[in-house]
Image (tube, rainbow, N blue to C red):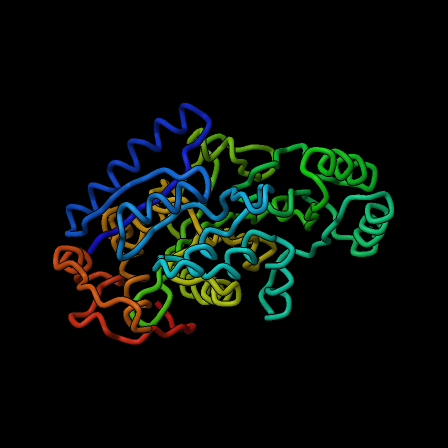
Length: 364
């Protein structure tokens, strides 16, 4: 089976160099498991077209949600999975609508509220003097101070730091004005859970197994604790975080909550979610519908569930393969080496690989 891996090269030289090593290791794992794996970078849709035309893959694993594309002389941002669907390219991961929903924090939180999934109270604030005043008024009525102010459509904790927390109306107005200036017209303001004395952050990786989502969570903390809990993109990129397993008595309750959150979001095959335990309850914060892999957080969370790096990487491909084969879109055989690697794990592929895809909130 020809497996095409596509990523976008980082502009930061240090991160790009680290990724080069990770991507080479990932490609080697797939080849070692029996796939005919190819790795390529793409910077735009033209690159994507060239890669697909030249390598003719059976299946694509792409870590890019949008790429620039020229249409009628105008550069637009194109949903990559949407492009795959319109060009009959078989891919692993969530459909274009789920990707867009996960990228919009406000849209996802509205869906969670509609489905009864607990999430922090929030207000979506847009640019413009009238919209800003209306947003502040809604936040004052909501009265859920302290608030944390985030760019509405940036993931991986980008755009937030200790100066993003507002404890009163004056701070809220000042931070909102600054964030709108920096990030444009869409800002999410939500109740900040990090001030609760029992607060713990949880990252949870999800890989679709045989018939049920396999949720593998871990507590996420800081190597050097701050006054208030807040993990930034700098903390992640700089490896300033530490992870630990959930206690057994918490695991069952959390997994049910996480499965409900992932299912409500509409993600499939694989994803990673951010959650909190605060004020004695679990809270859904956001979901990365197309998480970067290989990834240290993904690897460590899977590791606590007894899944190795090679197993979770192959398990992600198995999830997409299983779904597409059940839909009659993919007939290539799943490599025997990949099946052997997953044997005995919660991600195991059955011998026929023809079990229909089923969602659901079954216990792990």
